[in-house]
Amino acid sequence: MSVKKLLDLTGKIALVTGGSRGLGLQIAEALGEMGAKLAISARKSDELEQAREVLARQSIEAFPLVCDISRPEAIEPMVSKLLERYGKVDVLVNNAGATWGAPAEDHPLEAWQKLVNLNLTGTFLVTQAVGKRSMIPNRYGRIINVASIAGLRGNPVDMLETLGYNTTKGGLVNFTRALAAEWGEHGITVNAIAPGFFPSKMTQASLERLGEKIVARTPLRRLGDGEDLKGLVVLLASDASRHITGQVIAVDGGTSVA
Picture 1 (cartoon, rainbow, N blue to C red):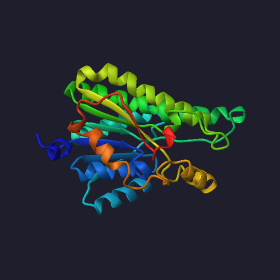
Picture 2: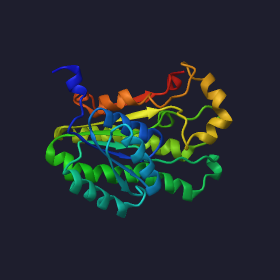
Picture 3: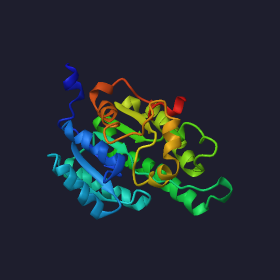
Picture 4: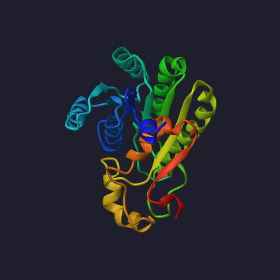
């Protein structure tokens, strides 16, 4: 089989949570360009409509799904709507997530629980529903979890104070490994991407304060941009990665090894 054929996503159905902006929209663009039929979820209908229009201008059709992933009761109805529309899910990208900055000794419990509910529990429940209702019966699936380099280590001294975020992203890293081992027998691969700093609504405040320091500590001396996740996402979503599972790949300009 040719490499082009291995990377081709024509006929595949892909769900990208948190797909209305930032990294999620970049991921959706990549999957759609390679032929996948898309569903994107987010909390806000207006942001989903804007994303749908952005994708439509690139001749990519996207099915918008309004869903707050942090609310367990919202997940099964979302998956049901998707399966009613397309009948299956081949690719699941768990991108929806949030962060919170505070010294550990002052980190609010409410904020901690918010991060756990969205970054971990929501991801688990979406994956469970898609796996049980589509991927396991069809004996095929590509699951891509968007973790973070914050889940691979602590924060450098005098930089960020994001204990809850680091903890949940670290949990997502081992969620990836454990699920890969368990669901491999069903023909499902589970991998994670660990982005470094990319300009986005989530990182805006941190980059305004620490952007120069972050770039100086990055071996490639740059932040991520609107193209830097696309190739890896396509690889992990396609049959070119059929023998890759349980892996966590940093896309961070070398920050995590410096």
